Image (cartoon, rainbow, N blue to C red; front, side, top):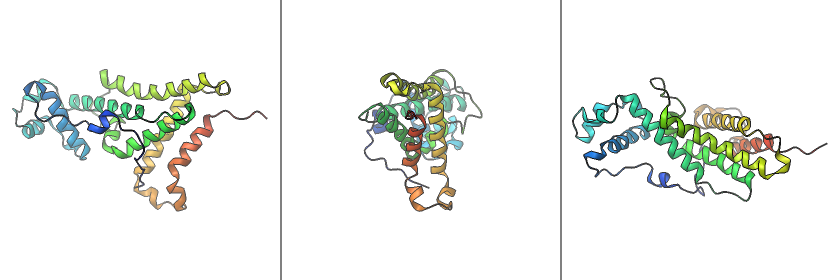
Amino acid sequence: MLTVSTKNILQCRHCQQILIYDVRMTEDDLKSRCLAKAFDELDSGRISELSLRAIARDLDVSHQAPYRHFKSKDDLLSDLTSECFKHFSEHLNARTQGENEWQGLRLMGLAYIRYAVSYPHRYRLMFSEHHNGFALSGEALKRAQHSFLMLRDQLDLIKKSNSDALQIDPQADAMFIWSSLHGLVSLLENPLTDKLPVRESVLKNLVDHVLDRIGTGIQPRPET
């Protein structure tokens, strides 16, 4: 699997904590303890084995205790996904702003990729790998939309701040960028990518190349 350096990226509060909850919580904080255990399972790649009964056993509480906060496993996954999107958005927001709006956009794209490769199981959960049993709604949906709106707003800022960038469509171009980054992440995670008949330098510089092409695609073209 290709690797992406995570150095020089500012760490948000959630990144520093990695959503670790205080295990010394009281019974009133059972919901947080359940989520903490669920994150342990998720980050270890055992999300398919997750169950409320197993969480209760590991937390040494009654089997029915977690059901006071989660009606089902799907309910727990929905809350877990919501927290992942919050983590994701804070990670994007923690990027350095750059010298201008264009560089800020590139740094946001780099932060997206670094999050995806640093937290692969959270990324997969957010983007529907385990959504067969539940649909995003409520707070989880709002947080998912917020992460997209951050990208749209950055494009809107570029458009308003640059008289030669009026051709930018913040919504359509945000979808273009998001789909490009999502596809890139899929390649970075796929072991087949390393075996493709391409030069080693192509793979080594793949992230920068894609980000460059995204910039070329939406930046204003000189008049002929």
